[in-house]
Picture 1 (tube, rainbow, N blue to C red):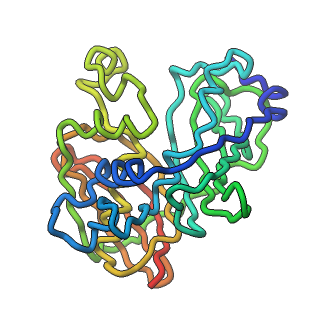
Picture 2: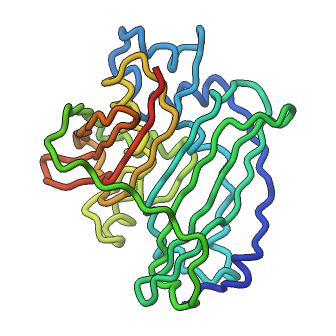
Length: 282
């Protein structure tokens, strides 16, 4: 089922208008574990309307272009799509109550032959009135049966390997057993994250946590460790899924101008986010 190269290269996705409510911002923060301790005054601004702030990774659940890969014209088997990587740059905090515009476009294609294809989608969110750029995200999707079109155009930038030394710190974050049912209300209602029968048919013993939930939880772990520093950019490759109820352990290497990290589930001895980096500003 080779990718329809001409269609995807010429694809024009309509801009998406979005506007945050205070409920949206607070719910997202709670869904990635912020204010697990309700007396932690450092995190309360993300989950309480008094002096409300939006957490850095919230752009990842805004302005989605819709299920364009389900359309038959790209010739993609949607059931064979895997979210392979995520990058996010932050330029200004998302505002509550202001109209924003999300623009999405395919910026990279990489033919992996029989293995499939990597499709990179870029999303930029701007203020609808002033044009202020709030965020830029790039998601890499691996389409397992779409290879063979014979072209690699702006392939996904490589991710940096982790330092070859013990981590400087580790932050453990327990997750709730019903976390996927909560997180899916942000944007992604794929039944894989809710329906046990769907999960079993997909090869899992039970519903799995969204990759972007794991990504957000890792970002929270970084901001907890580097208290007082503001997240500017974060990237990671998704390597294994997390089951709700597991504890996510984030190993951290302080590299001065950047932070290297990975996320693990120690009880299964698996890495769930790998080759990950972040920048934080004092």
